[in-house]
Image (cartoon, rainbow, N blue to C red; front, top):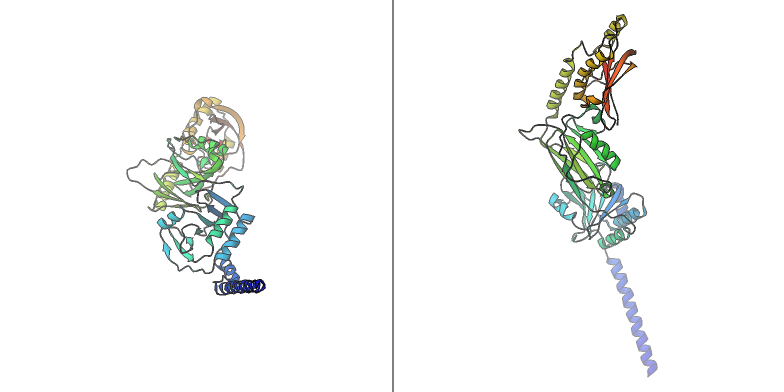
Amino acid sequence: MKKSIKIIIICILIVIAIGLIAALFVTQYYAPKVSTEASESIFTENIIAPDRIVYRNTNGQYYQFAKDTDAYNKIIERVKQSLSNYSESGNTLTQEDIDSIHEKSFIEFDYETASKNYIIQLEENENANMIKLGNTGGIVVSNNLKSLDEIEMIAEEQTQGQKAYSFQYKEMLSRNTINTMEYRYLQQFKQINYKIYQVKIQDMETYELYKEMCNLAFDEEINEDTFNDNDLILTVSLVPKITVKVNIGNIQYTYENMSDVNYQYTAHLLIVSKIVNTDCIYNTDLTEIEAEVDRGNFETEFDEQVDNLDPQIFVKDFDCFYEEYQSATGKITQEQAEEIAEVGFEEAERLVGEYDEATQECREIEVTPNNFFTRKYREGDETARYTVQGYAISRQDEMGNGVQIYVDKRLGKIIGASAFGD
């Protein structure tokens, strides 16, 4: 009897085992399959490998994984396995939709170029969508991604030992306006428009240089700690109103003219988290600054100032001057040279700023005439093919920046100048 019961139990267990195996087979057979070839094809033909991956977890912490790192490769591989379709004719989303996604956990494919980013919302993503971002809003390019929780789990695992960032930015305007952007300073900026100059600052030493250069004064102190998690974008502009929109993959600046405004250069500072791609900045002017008209007016005014220089004081033609210089026999004194240079300092203020007369020094030198004062807006720097005896009269500031005016000894004419310092 016991033996019969034992046999029955064994038979039941065998039947159950066979049933489980059959059920597993049926499930695997009929379960939706993602073609490895299809997912590889999507990445090869449609989605460019990103330059980095940004991951935001449920606690609002941001992490970045650089291309070809182990963490990057693991996430890419899992996303590939999750994709089964790709089409750029999917549903469109508003910018408000995208902003909402950025408030949840996600991974975002970011590019150093103008390529548009891709984002996958990892929580509350009912349709398991991948979205291609545009200038505003986005479009669903893939849906029904498999196992978003696994993508999130892998991304979270890769954060171990990685630096976490917060997504934040702050805008500040300098209390000091800038009457003119000195010519030598403009070369330190990227010119966005003839009215707009911009530079990225990543350390305190560089900031100090621009602080002195542009006479910056902000309500909040900038110090070494500022650069621990942030980069600075300094924009110097004649356009009075600047609006900034910050995304993970780019920063968008908009400029707006305003009526009845006394136009002076103002300094706008953006303090932005290092998690943001500060190498991808879009500067757009939605109000049409009429740059060509304004630039034409600016150039005309600039060139008119050059034309109005007194030819009895400023040398405009190197060859004619040299003929006169060679035939001249007189010699001016240092006092006379300094008196002539005063006119040069007044003109130099328009180009490189004003420097304290109390710092003035004068020395005798052999100098090559140049077109520091007489170059027009679209002309380059030029020097003569000869040297003459002259005086160099200089003024400078506490930082060692300054300008020196060149006056020849025989005719007592201003034959050029040079700016010096950082």
